[in-house]
Length: 268
Image 1 (cartoon, rainbow, N blue to C red):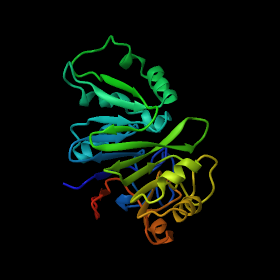
Image 2 (cartoon, rainbow, N blue to C red):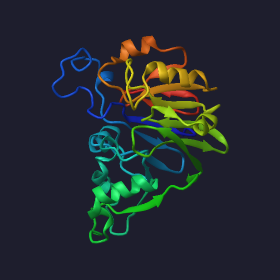
Image 3 (cartoon, helix red, strand yellow):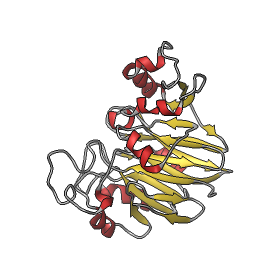
């Protein structure tokens, strides 16, 4: 298989697209690429499988992509559109002794413990229930042969991070779904990454997310192999957004698959 395979489980903003009560061109579009569930990715290597974030659409995303096993879950932050499907992870710890490593920073882990207290309290260790193995992120860590590095970013008032994935020192992938501004250290770490996935909410400015101009400016400042925007609002139609982007930068969409050995495949 590829060195690393990535599937965009969801590419939409917190309310998804179509948005309830909206009849704009994007929300009524017949282009399947304009149907966006909440943001998450699935990553697979020869020895491990994990997702980044578990939004409210996790169940339907896993059914759509036939994901039946995971070795870890990573969290960028505790906003509900990134953690709302936490309980659906129960299908990955069906056996009585099954545990699933859950990686998050202190603030995010504390929010998960508050919101889903019954999962962590130790009183519900039954077959079919979710049994997480909390692992607080305090520096780089490994999932199988993949080294995971934290990328500090600004986003709202909630502690938020992205992730950089390396294999044998090769910076294959960086994922930053929610971001207004990457930290200087994150920008240094991103230099030379082969595939960058980054927040590009809409065309107009937003107080806590990068718009197209801000995202493409960050990409242009880096030596990046290729880049994909994600976390779109309904202000952006896929076809029109793709046409506005510079060479080497693309719109993502739900179900898009990336083969990080260098070949890109897709499915709608």
